[in-house]
Image 1 (cartoon, rainbow, N blue to C red):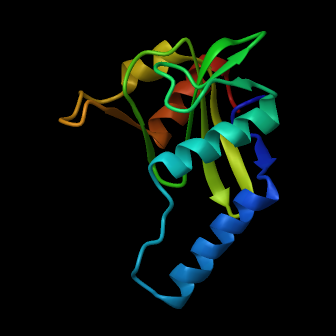
Image 2: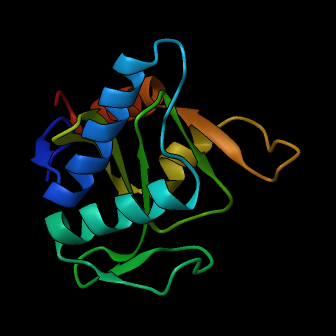
Length: 145
């Protein structure tokens, strides 16, 4: 699938983001953003539904899934402006939640080009890359999308 494509979220995941939107509307200024393991697991199951990956067990070091055509795959999803990495990966899928019902494919390709634009390793052992820089990398790597 090409970067820029939008995909439907499974209904159970859409319900989580609908609840977040409702809470944020009802309680202005209070964030209710899902994060941590919840978002990681959501990204993995969304990618499994879209790409038909075979998921590794949770917290597998290095990669989240296996695919016949892509090999080992690391999956990242965010509703924010960046994603974090702990190490290298062979193939990378980056998704961004753009509405309670849709995610956009930001990147689907080799991991090294995106890791090359990620920042320095922080005290928590993670490097961050902004969605805008990942989109720019996808455009330069795959053409206009």
